[in-house]
Image (cartoon, rainbow, N blue to C red; front, top):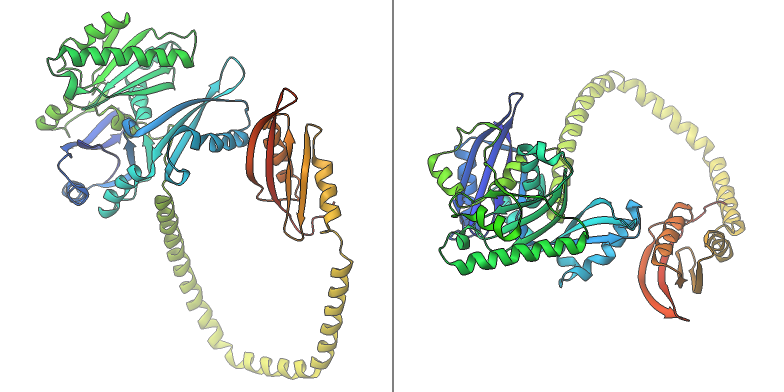
Length: 480
C-alpha cells in the first residue's frame, strides 16, 4: 500500500511514520521509533528496509524531516520586494552567515512578510551538505528516494496548527517549545507563520534528571532565546507558551517555565485530533514519552503547505533521471507501436516506392549541375551578407548599453569581446541599483546569462557607493 511517509534520522533516534488522511480525520497507519545511536549507516539501511518490507508499505510521497539542531537559521531583512532581487541578495549573503565554503552549503529560504521599515523579512535555513548526504546515503542504500527534505521546525508548526487552530487564528504571538530527546526547538509563531526559531541544547535526556543545574541552564537559554527574538522583532511580546514532545516525564516543567518567564504555559497532547492510533504499540508509546514526534506528524498530515526545502543535487539528478527513464519507456512503447503499423503499410508499397526512388534518382542526376551552380551562388551571397551585417559590432552594443544605463550608474571600464560579451565595471549609488540594472540588461534581449563578478562598497567624498563588475554575454544578431 502507498501512504505518505515521513522519516527523521537524528544522532540518537530513527523515527518513521505513515499516515492516512481521510474524510473522517487523520489516521496513523504505523509509527516506529528506534534507538539509532549504536547503528552505523549500513545497519540503519537494513533496519529501514526491513521495517518497510515487513509492513508491505510503499512510501508515497517520502518526506525527510531534517532536524533543527543540524540547521543554522538566520533572520534577514532585505531592501527589496522583487523575488528575483531577493534571491540574488540571499545568494550574496549566504557565505557570510556560516564558516563553510559555498559548495559545502545547502540552503533554503522563505519570505515572511514586510517589516516596519518596508524591508522584506526572510528566514534563511542553512545546512551542511555532509549532514544531508548522510541521510541521503542511508535512504539510497535502502533503495528509497526522498521526494522532499523539509525543516523539522515547520513540521512542528504544522502540527500545532492542526491541533490548536482556534488559538492561532487570533493573530497573537505564541512560543512553541518542542522538547526532543537531546535538544529543544524554541519557536515563535503568529497565525500560520514561523517568525523565529532557535535550538536549545537541553532535551529530555538533560531535563529528566534531578539536577537543578540542568533546569537552570534550560531556563537561562529560554530567556536568551526570547531576548534574541525581541531584538529581531522589537515591541512584540508572546502571550502564551505551548509545550510539546517529551514533557510528561519531566516533573513540573510547565510550572517552572511559567514562573520564570511570566507567561501561561499549556501542555499539548501528541495525538490530539488523531482518530486512529492503532498503529502504535505500547513499546512505541513508551519511546514517544522520551522524544518528540511533532515534526514528523506535522509534515505527514499537512502535505500541501509550502515550506523551506533542502535540495541535494544528487537527489535532483536522480529524480530527473527517473522521470527521463519513465518518459523514454512510454516513448519507446509508442514508437514500437508506430513502427509495427508503419511496417505493415511500407511492405505493401515497397515495389512502388522503389520505382519512384529510381525515377527521382534519374531526375536528380539531370538537375545536379544546375543545383551545384545555385549552391555556389548561394554561398557567395551568404558571405556578402555576413560582411555587410554590422549588427554585432562593438559600437552597436555600446549603444545598447548607453541607452539602458540609468543616471545613477557610471562606468570606469567597458570591455567588448567580439561575438562574445561586454564587461562593465563601475559604480552605483546603491547595491539595489546594480541588481535593477542587471535585470534591465537581461530583459533587453541584447544580453543573456549575466554574471556578477564582484560587488563591494566604498566611501567617496563622504558618500558610500557600490562598486561592481558584471559580465554580459551578448545575443548575436539582435535587432534594434
